[in-house]
Length: 375
Image 1 (cartoon, helix red, strand yellow):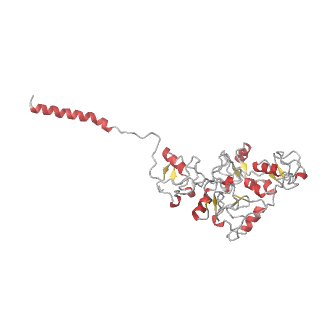
Image 2 (cartoon, rainbow, N blue to C red):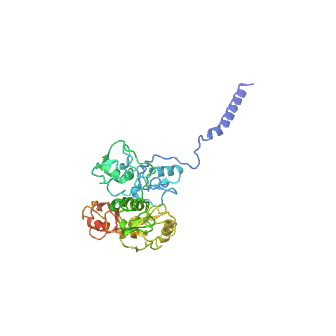
Image 3 (cartoon, rainbow, N blue to C red):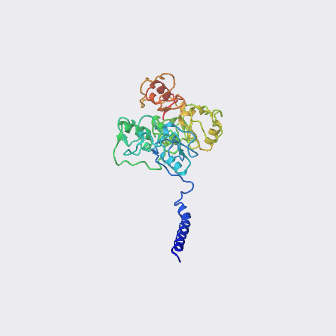
């Protein structure tokens, strides 16, 4: 065999070897799993939004099928868990005009766990969490509000008006329920337990009405069955009425003129419960009657106490324990309560933080008349 023939055979072998390896080299390694997306360098922020951990991304920087229908600027950078999960699942993406960074004030390093805003007194400008103390704390602190006034307490903490009271305070047990309207019981004089039928499991005070009442309440039991009546009021089986009054107007459910009427959710902000829409608007008050009436009958919603005819019938209410502030608001003395700490039919439809504590006369009058309550 000549040298030239040997060289040609060697070259042919190398060509065949490289050609056989090419398909193998072209195969990708570790292909991405279908249906998943990586989370790029996005600062998702924290979970201090009122709508955090509800299974929808409420951060307006994101868009997609996993985003909430209504997005608010106040929730930017404050629904981290939901939005990160949605990005990972590929159901939302960062909008083209959005920045991956959250506002500078969302840093949570070295801050306490403030919890959520499910307290009845959340967003009233005072820290109601009993773990904190200082000038920014509410005058009355209840254990049921522990870790349930996040926005107020975080703001006060960052402003230096409250500090964490100390170590050794544990969060309340998971089975502690927050009863809507429960804070009202501290503002009603239930009397004492000196009545003949006190502590028998039924409310015998004739100033109350409802399924938690005894069949035949007597005048002798007025303000003398405190424990039974307070317990029944707390769980919503009795409500106040004027002494001697038997005819209380029926609740007016309104009409079906809301654009969200008949959608299977109650959009009227006078109601509360799992059957209400996530975000309630003032223009839908009294405008989703069929949905709200049906869901109330099914036990999915209930009327907020301050909107019940029985509550206004129980006026006047003692306002001596409330610091109403002054009348420095530009909307003071307009016969509507413009202080955002209050809610009810006597409150203005648009409430501004700048009016906190600055519409004293209007809010005191409305509170005593049973037309507003503290949130």
